Image (cartoon, rainbow, N blue to C red):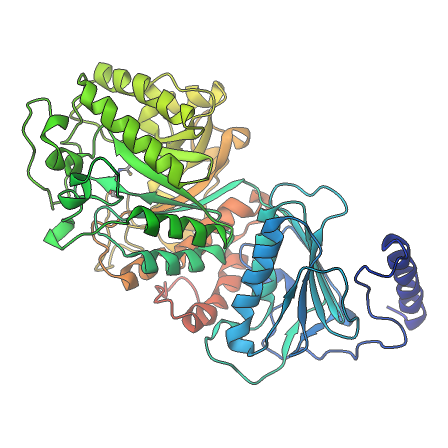
Amino acid sequence: MPRLVTSIIMALALLLAACTSGGNGDGPEPPTEESPMPPVELPEDTPALHEIVPAPRATTPDADGNFELTADTEILVGSEKSEAGSAAEYLAELLRPATGFTLPVRQEQRANDELPLVVLDDAADELPTDGYRLEVTPGRVELSASSGGGFFAGVQSLRQLLPADVERDEPVERTWAVAGGTIVDHPRFAYRGAMLDVARHFFEADVVKRHIDRLAQYKINHLHLHLTDDQGWRIEIPGWPRLTEVGAANEVGGGPGGYYTQEEFRDIVTYAADRGITIVPEIDMPGHTNAALASYAELNCDGNATEPYTGTHVGFSSLCIDSDTTYEFAADVISEVAALTPGEFFHIGGDEAEATTDAEYRRFFDRVLPMITDAGKRPVGWHEYAAVDLPESAVVQYWRIEADHPDTSAAASDGNQVIMSPADHSYLDMKYHDSDPWGNSWAGAVSTRAAYEWDPATYLTGVGEEAILGVEAPLWTELVQEESDIERMAFPRTQAVAEVGWTPQESRDWEDFRSRLSAHGERMAAQGIDFHPDPEVDW
Ligand code: TNX
């Protein structure tokens, strides 16, 4: 751009800033012409605006707009929204270890214009859900959003615009620059989820928290925790102590199992919220309940407790459908777990209830679904539960690999929303490639490319864009025992599904994703993630 034009634009911008700040001198102001920021040279490893994952909607680079993060940089919160404050704190926490900078977060409007600033403020116009605008100019990065989700998403984009070194946990002496320009972005779907099965193998709270850290960077905004199954009950329920004394003491293969106390679980929920992630608790019923049936004899129709189960078969267990104790149990568990989670969803399982007749299954959900809506939550269930009368707020999660499921399409026509988790594209417990030594294979291999190349809106007959709440990548853990197994199975397929959920279909392209993803190998390595270097990508 010619210098004269640049100067005119700058003068106009200054004039506009003076007008919009109300002229009372207490609004943050851009650098003045008397103290222009010197031009910033970008180190070679500085990512370009379009290189982030998931791909943003619109980027406008500006070579004159580069920003340098320095020891003087401050983070300023102009928005009253508490999430803007949390997002700012989170940003500071992300950037402090590698930069070694203090990066103070200030809630005040006043700032020293001489200092480089990162400003989080309300968008002047209403942005779509989870949308944000990121403007990088010399001396100032402005992140604006209309909602908490937007601030968290923008923070992740800004983080990815810094070089991979920013992911190290020790200070690195170097220039920290961000390429100039503007990103305007919002997601295709409101729900971008991951699931972790903590029932088949139990994972301690700090493992879950580290997983949350890793998911959040790809704008995953829901973590569904599969808290109960045949092999284990993982959440403390007052009044039902044997669920954790007996039901939690096993896992697949006979290991010691474990569970979260209510306090630990609340702590996970808060930790996730501070990173823009809502926990979706799942209590799987009426099947997948052997851990409960082994804990309480009275939950069984014959009055005998079952034996603990540490194998991997499915479909053999059921709560006693026509016993009042079952509904006292369900009511207590649902109200306790609903109270632990401020999020809008409560997952009630409903899958593979092969030990229950269709009529029993229906009777069960006719009594249990109102407990969930009465607790103020939207029920979510695996797609088998689309066979029952669902309340309007209920969400159906499709997990199979067939292109037709009439109950799910009927629910969608009735206005129920659908989460798409087709196993042949989104199941993180599958092998990446047939030759892999680990992983399930009933849905076939799910390579990174397979996790990327599908369209949620054309997968299932009768379930189009409008019916879809979002996507979710489940990680079942029959074969996953260590934290490093979680990492290997989840990454990089989580990035692929995250982009399926965020980026519009017409803007997605495997070759383009593949080249952007390759730069994330270094970022993941710097974070200590034991990802799978799928040979489909040049790492
Ligand atoms: C099917 S997907 C299941 C799980 C297994 C998984 C293994 C679903 C709702 N049920 O119980 O863990 O396959 O891939």
